[in-house]
Length: 430
Ligand code: AMP
Ligand code: GLY
Image (cartoon, rainbow, N blue to C red; front, side, top):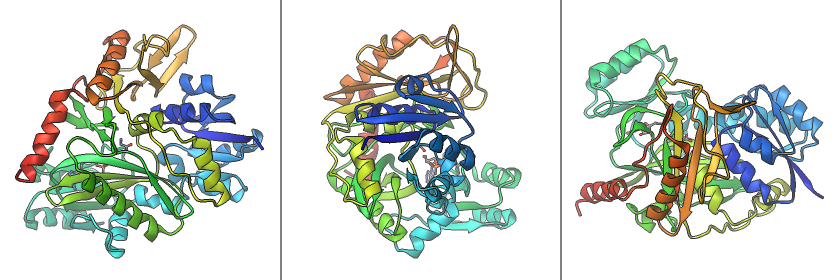
């Protein structure tokens, strides 16, 4: 029987998912709040709708006779889209609202780790009372990360001793109007991501990726959804050992065991500290940009993973091409604080050369494609080494031009990768 897959979401991550499904025997339909031109070209049908409205998503799923749904972003998961599809008998690859709390409620996530003795959990306290939280900042011996419990698109965390002083941190806690926050030990080290395909108790992990959250080169400026990322031709990254990667995988496996019935992608964001990997957060979906590193090198048929998950079978072992990848986002100037929309996008799939082009939050008009206020498009280079992959990505950005756009040219360059290696060596006292 041929499958009809409904893809939910319209960012770069979802464009990568659509591409991964393009190679499979599948009828693909997509829905998102924005019309992503890359996805629209691949899909047999594209509907613009509010993806946090479970009824609207279900209506479209039923209209196209979807047999499987893939939920890209976290917001529809939080809104219960997987629950709604499931109750109508449509298999959703993505956790139900309750399981997605591992991402959507950071207080729940930390308590869950502590309760189940999952390794890699930093010291933490949760607070509903912001005065008590400020007192804790005064009393705590060391720096703290201040994290709103709910979703903030990666932009709500403030780290004392890094982005803010203790006084500024307390001001942020008092002024921000959050109902609940987590205060936790500031972790020092290098961040990396491991994404796992999870279903029927199986966990299949992908090579590690390093994202770059800060807006400007040299890791300066405000946090963003992610400016770009790289992965190596092996499972680990140049600043990690294979044992570090295995430790991260063990943490993900322990989490899946404790969650019992989790399905979809479980994304672990880790800090490689002097004591090994610690968990910064879990996400209930692919990373964006990380999906654009992982899916282009996935050689296993994505549809086979989805149908095995749905049919209660063991997930296939995953094969990845032994290639490095470098992904760079182009974002509107001023992003994320004061983004200016309306720049014309000059690059397209043909002009990107050897790079892959993924559209994100852009607007397709009669005379071309224009930026909005969020991340616009990404280019991905694939090659035998990170350095070569970086050059391929840069060549595509050159075609795109810089007019009205901002990008971090430093991502994946040898100097920055070397800094990461040196940083970890220094932490480990090597
Ligand atoms: P999150 O929204 O949890 O991904 O956090 C955003 C960013 O804040 C992370 O990518 C880290 O750079 C930083 N961060 C979060 N938690 C901590 C922590 N405990 N120590 C240091 N940095 C952190
Ligand atoms: N790259 C960070 C995220 O997807 O949350």
